Image (cartoon, rainbow, N blue to C red; front, side, top):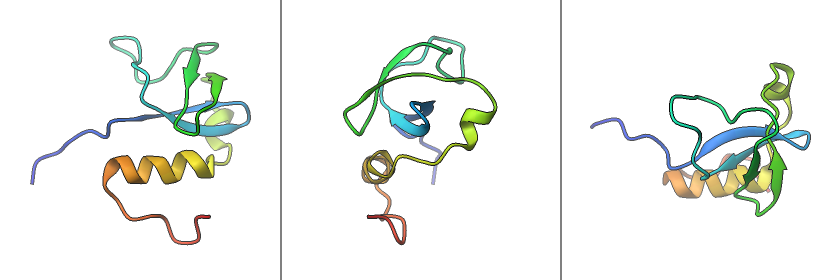
Length: 79
């Protein structure tokens, strides 16, 4: 089996870790702070690239949508 990157990226914003299919700037692993990002939960958030932001809780709607895009079963206990 070969590696295939997921069609989304995680981005902290608005107090949660969201998932997005928006393109990141070439050569970056994260969205730069303040970048307006459309999320899988259909919100628009400003990216927060601080270290503490990566510890925020995961948006449950983004998590469900990300699992579906990745072809994975839902996470146990997800609503």
